Image 1 (cartoon, rainbow, N blue to C red):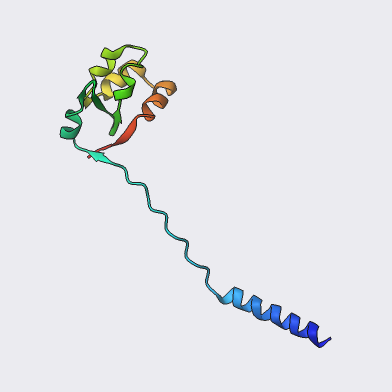
Image 2: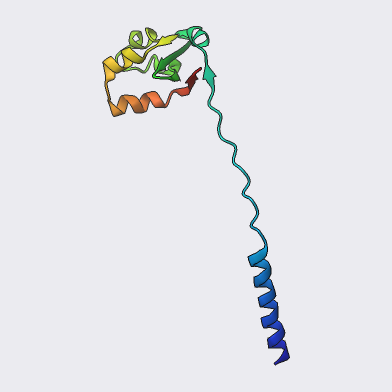
Length: 111
């Protein structure tokens, strides 16, 4: 019978310790950094070998999309190194498919 009392007392002590010991702080997860680009940097990516464009305040690397674009290469080449917001919006409006494709080329934001 004494062993049961010691066992119960042990559980009580462990419970008190568990309740009074602060939980460890979670390790902070570093926030992913979003790369920023200046207009001057984007302007240097203005041809078929490296094609960056701006839509909204976001920067997209369309280099690999140039030859894949259903509307032809010229439609993309005109956007290289420039703010393509108006052209993209005029051509695609609020097309979810076009937005989805564009999002896959996101590389950063304009400073």
